[in-house]
Image 1: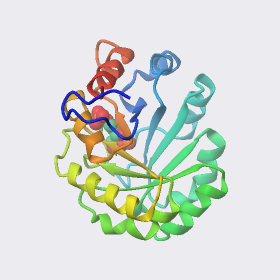
Image 2: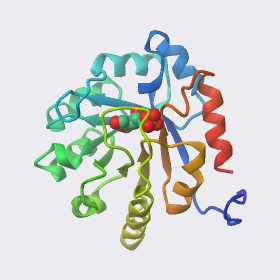
Image 3: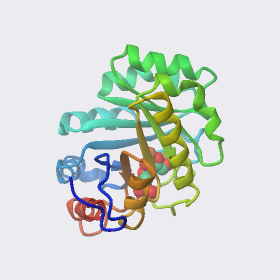
Length: 228
Ligand SMILES: O=C(CO)[C@@H](O)[C@H](O)COP(=O)(O)O
Ligand SMILES: [Fe+2]
């Protein structure tokens, strides 16, 4: 394993990259997915115009992405009462499903349902929500997603307080002996990727830093280079 240029330390974990297809050209979805074939996950942002002030896409786009790519489909549900649609997203091709703590009255039940569908179960929370909101389910999840922008749009600026939230979660998961992933989503760039990894993140989502005007693969490689 390589030594971090910034810290001089050997990172103890490898960091996965999850390009967000929200930033891609949907008229070329298959090609845009091929451009990130070397990534670990394709991050799929589903927005309902109610939980967040934007509508992105839903089941048909996930199903099309599933047909076009063998990548792990990492589905981030920004929808009210996600428990209504878990089976539909699983059947449309999700490999992992992440729900917001603010969107459901029954977080444990939602997590359990995702696992019963045979999918990787994730929970997430808005930047303004106390981390305590996810603590009761930490032993039951496969992934915790730290939103580092307010959800709803790509291309926003990273909120620096997110770094401390990642450190706290890393400590809590280590205390539990949990192997759950810590994913960070929003404003991730080559400039903050290494610091997030050092704080304990194991998955980095990036939309605009990957799908820039110069194409998907170049942005992905820049992120990877920042993590060496
Ligand atoms: O969930 C979201 C936004 O709500 C994200 O997944 C964005 O799609 C990330 O985009 P960038 O901030 O990396 O441009
Ligand atoms: Fe997302």
